[in-house]
Length: 74
Ligand SMILES: [Zn+2]
Image 1 (cartoon, protein in one colour):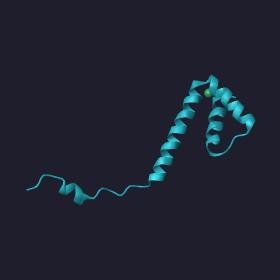
Image 2 (tube, rainbow, N blue to C red):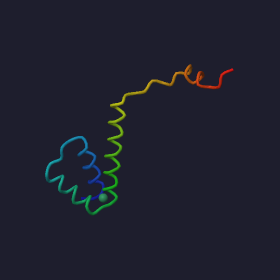
Image 3 (cartoon, helix red, strand yellow):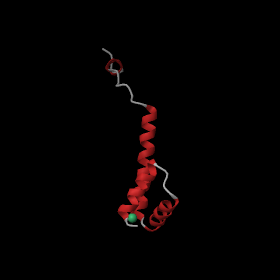
Image 4 (cartoon, rainbow, N blue to C red):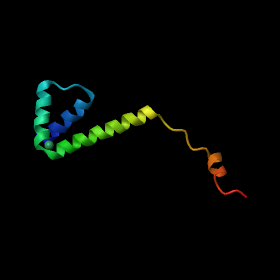
């Protein structure tokens, strides 16, 4: 397994359950290749952030009236 195969497998493993042989190949590579291990970690983080964002939903834009009223009064 080379780095290209490993990143493809890691990416696919995020969406679907990998077979046992694929998992073993992937973990074997991640154990010896820090580049791919880091790639997978970053992908996991990004995915968690994306899920958190999707859960929170889009925020309404700030109300300009609030911003104006918080300024100094005349
Ligand atoms: Zn690698």
